[in-house]
Length: 171
Image 1 (cartoon, rainbow, N blue to C red):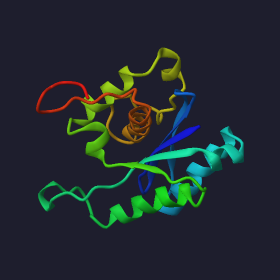
Image 2 (image 1 turned 90 degrees about the horizontal axis):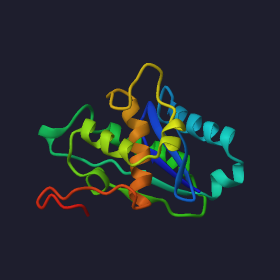
Image 3 (image 1 turned 120 degrees about the horizontal axis):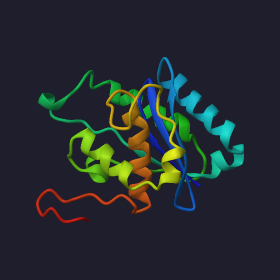
Image 4 (image 1 turned 30 degrees about the vertical axis):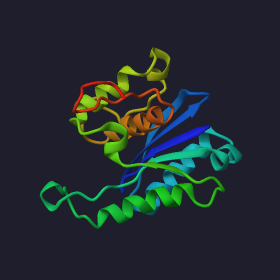
């Protein structure tokens, strides 16, 4: 099992892959980083046996610090985002695989990234994605956490190709 995570302080996307196929994806919410991580863990344990949750390989996005002119919000929030992932993964015995945003999705607008990720899923896999109520797959608020978690997993599985900006070729 592979559990890919797009960590956020109050909303974290989770995608679970089994034998290279998306098994399910959902959004976990909480009032702070610890509540979000606990909620994500609890939701995983509702769907999977605890030993699978603990023995799975975790893939996640590690926050990236940008130049001041590109920052959104308080840069100290990046610390809390990292804590969400750390609390969820814990000391499971397997080192997580971490990607910076640029490594797995490049520098494309969120809508373009979401559309690319969605297009890599089969019809059956799309049915297993639980998006927040009233949101479309390309909507910004909160849905992107789930879509990004799927994208991180697809990248690890080499199902999500990204284009090189310079050449336009797939890598």
